[in-house]
Length: 247
Image 1 (tube, helix red, strand yellow):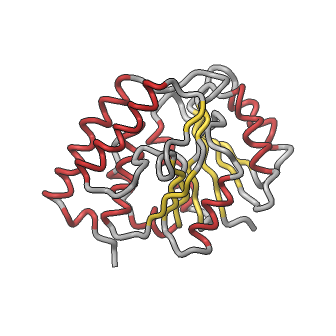
Image 2: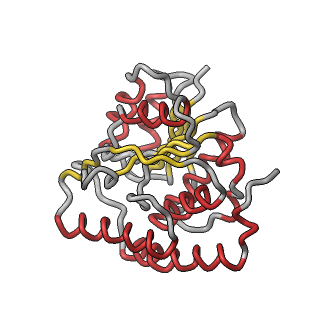
Image 3: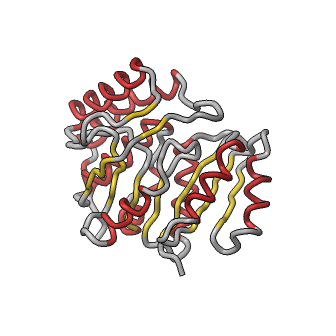
């Protein structure tokens, strides 16, 4: 029985989903995958359903009624995973920007090196980004500097979306209180785990921009991150009890 679940949110990822699933299922370590699809009009969910007959008991699908946001998709997936037997729970993009082979490295960091959260980091060892225009690289890099300055987090890649959690981290976090989506969601989850005292490790990865499909980045997501960081810091000051691990 696999102890690791990879959660992949999708919206119009038909061009990428089959390839990434095949790569994950070809790894030497056994991973299960949960796809959380937001009613993609391009038929992503239908393609996943077809693949479930090829990978029975390893591939699962949860469909939602509409485009409800990245953060809520992951929360949905976290609750699904916690209701089952998984000890290691991963976040991963559907667009092949994350190399599936790095799942094993993130897993080993948590399973064998004593860490509670492993972050696939683009910036812990220089700037490891492929195919991004310079403007976006600079925006992402300096966004992480901004987040570190406001929150005090020591991580180089504060907006990273490629992560492995030990089960106990997600059990400790009140998932119903996590309200952000997009980059702000990724920041909030790291900040909460760090403030709770969990052991966090950045693992250097190479991030490759998508070649198929459309990016989900928007100005609204960016603005949420800018203001969300300030809200996070404020909450940690006025309600420090939220960041204590349950006994």
